[in-house]
Length: 120
Image (cartoon, rainbow, N blue to C red):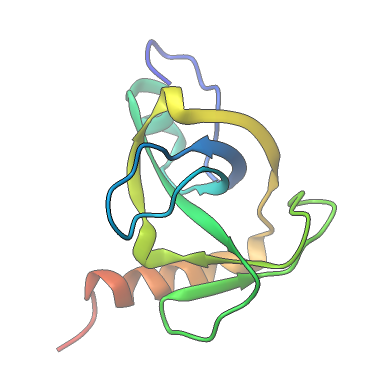
């Protein structure tokens, strides 16, 4: 968050108030993964987050996450990488948990697909 205070960190799963939204954007207050790096979280007013959705889905731009005591999710959910967004730090609310390390490679691959990196 601004002024050099780090109030949320990369890899945390936080409640985020996503409303108001438009069209196909995910709505409501949802658990979201904080994706942005910590120096930007410490000094910037915005952060980058990816909302979780309920259930599981098979798609190259999705990362399925199993609920655990570490990540704090109430049930299995998936990250819809296509819904990545920049949000004001004021939208970031309480801590849900911490995402396990074993998901980061899948997240990087899905980001590459969504953003078109590494493609012809």
